[in-house]
Image 1 (tube, rainbow, N blue to C red):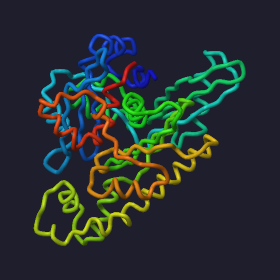
Image 2 (image 1 turned 120 degrees about the vertical axis):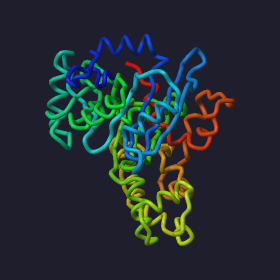
Image 3 (image 1 turned 90 degrees about the horizontal axis):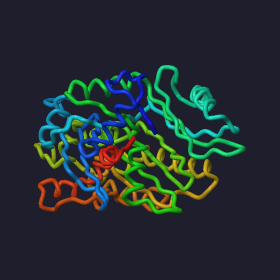
Image 4 (image 1 turned 90 degrees about the vertical axis):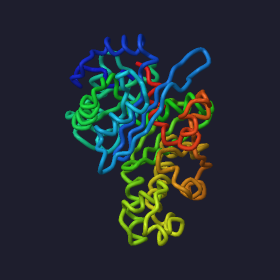
Length: 355
């Protein structure tokens, strides 16, 4: 998709400029996953052997480190000279939907997409940016998918990047970035795969099958909500639970019981994911997905991946895309990715993005 390389975003570069940048500086671009809890950066280089890691880093967002400070620290610690970022958006102010139209002329499709967006978006699509991708076009029908994000979320993300002295070359959807990464790393032809990325504020479910029509849903129940539930169950503050999950112990750590309360804290998420998977199967008039790939920062919490494997209705595995991306084991970040690679799936997918 030509996503967000349009003048509507009031970016510095035109679409042609973005393509020129991506072509001439492809090894300088980096994926920047800006979350509410952490900033993650991945820079890749590509040659005849595929993708290889050039740089990676993460910085937490906390009381002493706001988002802009965290982004700047992440860039500095990654030790890259580039300022050309590819970022992503997700959440309730975004939407990805399929469309099937009667046969249309190419110049008629955009108008049909805009009308469709008004019907299917859960927000006012006139207050946003719309793009689309045609997957198939024949004598009887046109199939594809549209993607919409509000001006509000675009301006917010663009402002963070600009204030961090970076150039936002392109915006994508987190769900589409995950699918892009899975296609390169692990997707099996003929299979239907689901990626579940559990972040701090949102859980993204992205599903891809042979029809090449992605199904994406952002669930507003994720790590923060599970943490709050665990804090209430243990009668401690959410900050104490967060520190505990990150291996930081304090005077209240001895009375914290994560495993005893994790399933109950995740029940709403499990139900939402399961309903989404069954809805997708009905939509496709097919069976459930063949495999679920679990990733995201919260997926690394002890016991969480095993819980998902036991409770979700399809084979589920913790997914580390860097098992398929070349990483120099002599470099200092190789150990980080062996342990925390699943948390960097969105950033890796953004880094693979092309115009």
